[in-house]
Image (tube, rainbow, N blue to C red):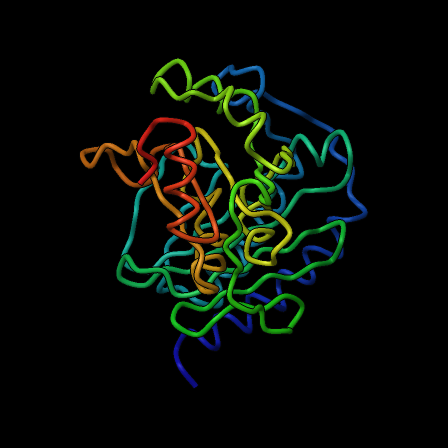
Length: 263
């Protein structure tokens, strides 16, 4: 058994226990992070993170953590990257389309990622160099569709950012895409591309805990995750604009339509 086999097995068992409790929980406090009106955290986010960190650190004391609900964020040699609830607004308002997302990195490289769609009990697992699974069934390689047949997940803020800061011709999307969505969870959107439910995702101001596990899963089935406007001098945990797709060809077609280089 590889070193990470034990870590993945333990994580899966732990996450199943946490998920089972989470589906019955209701938040009692809601706060703004950084005094930003649409960046929220609940007492449940904090409790889920504390439970994951406590169990993982006790079982694997050689690893560090990079968690969303912390005030400082530093990369380490061996680390768990945790988003206790990705899609907190959905958790608060709809009780669906929210996820627990955990990735494991060793020496700065991704090893495996797990994302669970809490409400639907869908388990996405990706292992670097081995593949990805949905509820223990292997996911096939993603199918790259032209934009006319593609569903994109993107929100209004991201479109505004592309238009205002990068000069993207976002109006062209309205008569180019087959359909668009905004599900409110970056981790789930990456997983849904991997599962063939969506084709493209554009998300602004994403931090590494938002995408670490989902990116492992999507890349394991041949998908692409890129950061076209990333500043190489910026530390990795810093928020970025992320674009994900089933293929490089899709990214190129999207770049042409928007008239901006997306990688």
